[in-house]
Length: 197
Image (tube, rainbow, N blue to C red; front, side):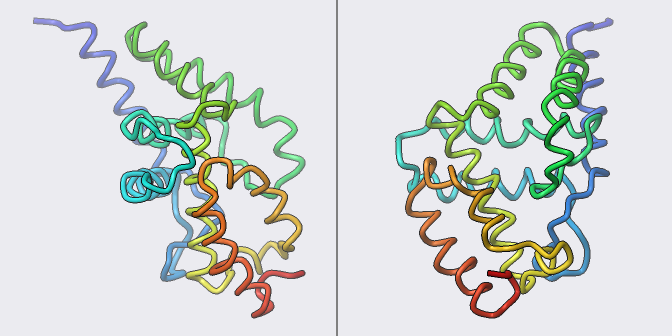
Protein backbone atom coordinates (compact mmCIF):
# COMPACT_ATOMS: atom_id res chain seq x y z
CA UNK A 1 0.00 0.00 0.00
CA UNK A 2 1.35 3.42 -0.99
CA UNK A 3 1.30 5.94 1.86
CA UNK A 4 1.84 9.43 0.46
CA UNK A 5 2.19 11.07 3.89
CA UNK A 6 4.85 8.63 5.02
CA UNK A 7 6.63 8.95 1.68
CA UNK A 8 6.83 12.73 2.09
CA UNK A 9 8.10 12.38 5.65
CA UNK A 10 10.88 10.02 4.59
CA UNK A 11 11.81 12.29 1.66
CA UNK A 12 12.33 15.09 4.19
CA UNK A 13 14.23 12.80 6.56
CA UNK A 14 16.57 11.74 3.74
CA UNK A 15 17.00 15.35 2.64
CA UNK A 16 18.10 16.57 6.07
CA UNK A 17 20.89 13.97 6.09
CA UNK A 18 22.67 16.64 4.00
CA UNK A 19 22.96 18.75 7.14
CA UNK A 20 25.85 16.48 8.15
CA UNK A 21 27.84 17.94 5.25
CA UNK A 22 27.40 21.61 6.25
CA UNK A 23 30.63 22.52 8.03
CA UNK A 24 30.77 25.25 10.63
CA UNK A 25 33.76 27.31 11.80
CA UNK A 26 33.75 25.95 15.36
CA UNK A 27 36.07 23.05 16.17
CA UNK A 28 35.19 19.91 18.08
CA UNK A 29 36.37 19.99 21.70
CA UNK A 30 39.55 18.06 20.82
CA UNK A 31 40.30 20.57 18.01
CA UNK A 32 40.71 17.69 15.52
CA UNK A 33 38.27 19.12 12.96
CA UNK A 34 35.41 21.56 12.55
CA UNK A 35 31.94 20.43 13.57
CA UNK A 36 29.05 20.16 11.14
CA UNK A 37 25.52 21.54 11.49
CA UNK A 38 24.00 18.24 12.59
CA UNK A 39 26.59 17.84 15.36
CA UNK A 40 25.98 21.40 16.51
CA UNK A 41 22.20 20.86 16.60
CA UNK A 42 22.52 17.58 18.52
CA UNK A 43 24.91 19.13 21.04
CA UNK A 44 22.70 22.18 21.62
CA UNK A 45 19.62 19.92 21.96
CA UNK A 46 21.31 17.82 24.65
CA UNK A 47 22.39 21.03 26.39
CA UNK A 48 18.76 22.19 26.38
CA UNK A 49 17.59 19.01 28.07
CA UNK A 50 20.30 19.24 30.73
CA UNK A 51 20.32 23.00 31.31
CA UNK A 52 16.65 23.98 30.95
CA UNK A 53 16.46 24.56 34.72
CA UNK A 54 18.50 27.74 34.16
CA UNK A 55 16.05 29.32 31.70
CA UNK A 56 14.90 32.77 32.81
CA UNK A 57 11.29 31.69 32.20
CA UNK A 58 9.55 28.32 32.26
CA UNK A 59 9.93 26.65 28.86
CA UNK A 60 8.42 23.74 26.98
CA UNK A 61 11.60 21.66 26.66
CA UNK A 62 10.36 19.44 23.81
CA UNK A 63 9.32 22.47 21.76
CA UNK A 64 12.70 24.11 22.42
CA UNK A 65 14.61 20.95 21.49
CA UNK A 66 12.55 20.60 18.29
CA UNK A 67 13.33 24.21 17.41
CA UNK A 68 17.05 23.64 17.94
CA UNK A 69 17.18 20.37 16.02
CA UNK A 70 15.35 21.73 12.99
CA UNK A 71 16.20 25.45 12.70
CA UNK A 72 19.51 24.96 10.85
CA UNK A 73 18.25 22.55 8.18
CA UNK A 74 17.80 25.66 6.02
CA UNK A 75 21.59 25.76 5.75
CA UNK A 76 21.42 22.74 3.41
CA UNK A 77 20.49 25.29 0.72
CA UNK A 78 21.59 28.57 2.29
CA UNK A 79 24.97 27.44 3.65
CA UNK A 80 26.32 28.25 7.09
CA UNK A 81 26.72 31.97 7.67
CA UNK A 82 29.61 32.40 10.10
CA UNK A 83 28.60 34.32 13.21
CA UNK A 84 31.11 37.08 12.42
CA UNK A 85 30.61 37.26 8.64
CA UNK A 86 29.03 40.71 8.29
CA UNK A 87 28.78 40.52 4.48
CA UNK A 88 27.10 37.12 4.60
CA UNK A 89 24.58 38.33 7.17
CA UNK A 90 23.22 40.86 4.65
CA UNK A 91 21.76 38.08 2.48
CA UNK A 92 21.31 35.43 5.17
CA UNK A 93 17.60 36.04 5.82
CA UNK A 94 16.56 35.91 2.16
CA UNK A 95 18.67 32.79 1.48
CA UNK A 96 17.28 31.03 4.53
CA UNK A 97 13.65 31.97 3.78
CA UNK A 98 13.86 30.36 0.34
CA UNK A 99 15.49 27.29 1.86
CA UNK A 100 12.85 27.01 4.59
CA UNK A 101 10.04 27.07 2.03
CA UNK A 102 11.66 24.38 -0.09
CA UNK A 103 12.92 22.02 2.62
CA UNK A 104 10.03 22.19 5.10
CA UNK A 105 7.72 22.19 2.05
CA UNK A 106 8.72 18.59 1.38
CA UNK A 107 6.64 17.55 4.41
CA UNK A 108 2.86 17.05 4.62
CA UNK A 109 1.16 20.45 4.91
CA UNK A 110 0.48 20.30 8.66
CA UNK A 111 4.12 19.48 9.50
CA UNK A 112 5.39 21.99 6.93
CA UNK A 113 3.32 24.71 8.61
CA UNK A 114 4.44 23.67 12.09
CA UNK A 115 8.15 23.70 11.24
CA UNK A 116 7.93 26.97 9.31
CA UNK A 117 6.27 28.54 12.34
CA UNK A 118 8.91 27.11 14.70
CA UNK A 119 11.70 28.36 12.43
CA UNK A 120 10.15 31.84 12.34
CA UNK A 121 9.64 31.77 16.12
CA UNK A 122 13.33 30.93 16.59
CA UNK A 123 14.35 33.75 14.24
CA UNK A 124 12.16 36.33 16.01
CA UNK A 125 13.29 35.23 19.53
CA UNK A 126 10.17 36.62 21.20
CA UNK A 127 8.99 33.55 23.15
CA UNK A 128 10.67 31.94 26.19
CA UNK A 129 11.44 28.83 24.10
CA UNK A 130 13.00 30.80 21.25
CA UNK A 131 15.05 32.93 23.63
CA UNK A 132 16.42 29.85 25.39
CA UNK A 133 17.04 28.06 22.08
CA UNK A 134 19.09 31.01 20.87
CA UNK A 135 21.00 31.03 24.15
CA UNK A 136 21.92 27.38 23.57
CA UNK A 137 22.78 28.14 19.93
CA UNK A 138 25.24 30.82 21.09
CA UNK A 139 26.61 29.19 24.25
CA UNK A 140 27.56 25.92 22.53
CA UNK A 141 30.22 27.49 20.25
CA UNK A 142 31.53 29.62 23.13
CA UNK A 143 32.10 26.43 25.10
CA UNK A 144 33.89 24.76 22.18
CA UNK A 145 36.02 27.83 21.50
CA UNK A 146 37.15 27.74 25.10
CA UNK A 147 37.81 23.97 24.94
CA UNK A 148 40.08 24.50 21.92
CA UNK A 149 41.93 27.47 23.43
CA UNK A 150 40.15 29.86 21.11
CA UNK A 151 41.27 28.08 17.93
CA UNK A 152 38.47 29.39 15.73
CA UNK A 153 38.68 32.87 17.27
CA UNK A 154 42.41 32.96 16.57
CA UNK A 155 41.98 31.73 12.97
CA UNK A 156 39.52 34.52 12.24
CA UNK A 157 41.21 37.17 14.43
CA UNK A 158 37.99 37.65 16.40
CA UNK A 159 37.92 40.39 19.01
CA UNK A 160 36.12 40.56 22.34
CA UNK A 161 33.85 43.32 21.04
CA UNK A 162 32.61 41.01 18.26
CA UNK A 163 31.86 38.18 20.70
CA UNK A 164 30.01 40.55 23.03
CA UNK A 165 28.01 42.03 20.14
CA UNK A 166 27.12 38.54 18.90
CA UNK A 167 25.92 37.65 22.39
CA UNK A 168 24.10 40.86 23.29
CA UNK A 169 20.81 38.94 23.67
CA UNK A 170 22.19 35.65 25.06
CA UNK A 171 21.26 36.53 28.66
CA UNK A 172 17.61 36.95 27.61
CA UNK A 173 17.30 33.16 27.55
CA UNK A 174 19.39 32.52 30.65
CA UNK A 175 21.21 35.13 32.71
CA UNK A 176 22.86 32.36 34.75
CA UNK A 177 24.32 30.57 31.71
CA UNK A 178 25.48 33.83 30.13
CA UNK A 179 27.25 34.86 33.34
CA UNK A 180 28.87 31.43 33.56
CA UNK A 181 30.02 31.54 29.92
CA UNK A 182 31.38 35.06 30.21
CA UNK A 183 33.27 34.41 33.43
CA UNK A 184 34.59 30.93 32.59
CA UNK A 185 35.15 31.06 28.83
CA UNK A 186 35.22 34.59 27.46
CA UNK A 187 37.11 36.35 30.26
CA UNK A 188 39.64 33.51 30.47
CA UNK A 189 40.37 33.67 26.74
CA UNK A 190 40.79 37.43 26.91
CA UNK A 191 43.23 36.96 29.78
CA UNK A 192 45.12 34.25 27.85
CA UNK A 193 45.28 36.42 24.73
CA UNK A 194 43.33 33.96 22.56
CA UNK A 195 40.46 36.45 22.29
CA UNK A 196 41.75 39.89 21.39
CA UNK A 197 40.60 42.78 23.55
